[in-house]
Length: 436
Image (cartoon, rainbow, N blue to C red; front, side, top):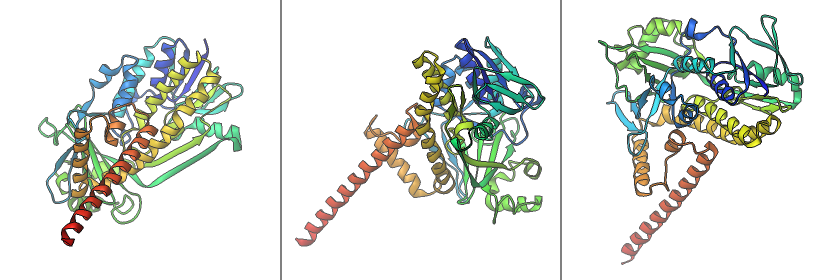
């Protein structure tokens, strides 16, 4: 049985180690950081995850669903906080009972690391930043001068992947990479519990849409909320323009007045928590020489506005596992099959995630948008199984992302044609009445 090296012990790498260990492989999992179960998560870098059906399906296949969801909080819809108006709840599903699940990235990573460490054949090496890679020889070099060799090397080391950078250096013009950053960043804030209870409804993902910016908040098991600002990097009302505590507080009083009393450490959190980057990574090929491949964010990082980054990465793991089944664990056949099976889907969710940013930031507080959502739920009720909203297909099914995009496009074309037909009929009826 082959020896596999996985670079990156984050969410994807740890889950992948579990899958491959269960297949009987000897797996060495290398991580640049110290063990986060000992050191804790980096301040202001967690971004709570919205774990939905795709990610849950990947956990379910190896018996981790119940354990992970025990630390998650279900969110059945958006609670929209318009400026100067009452908060309103918008259910994610027609039935109102389907939920995405809020879970801290650190808590999930810890659970997956524990699972990987407990899987036969898996060894985890912390404090091992990758510095050298020879895909032809299957050798790896690390910052401490140590070396390793493996039959298969899988880069699961995130959007800033060292594996991807080294593959690009090795392949030269045979490897293409593009990184597109938004003119927006993110910063985390904490909404603590009030008198031991949640300060907001814990059954919803809270959104404060403000046109060119927004804040969201997701609940935590300790009854706090992790709030995340998504603001422009430059210009009025941007991270760059709000440097002093007084300026931050003025901005919040004007744009988020209901949050002032909910975030007692606003100025301190804002000052100390870093601004993170938001971008989309595309590259290719994801695999080469039948022995080296990228997976998850290392291959296709996306912006977080559909809550699908981790879910999509977990689906990569399921797809690779499926390809190994299909090829009888023949890696030179399985890796190209895996890339073909996931590339179109990764591009589809990247596109949908960017579009959902505009929806969350600009549209959710719009009465016309809410009316449209009501129409959509009505159509789902009238045409069960035939008309399904994009959100339901993305979050509550494992329908491939590319097929979701095609299906929603067809649904909209049919609805557009029907609307034109109704309008034409109404116009004709009006004309007959006028002629009479």
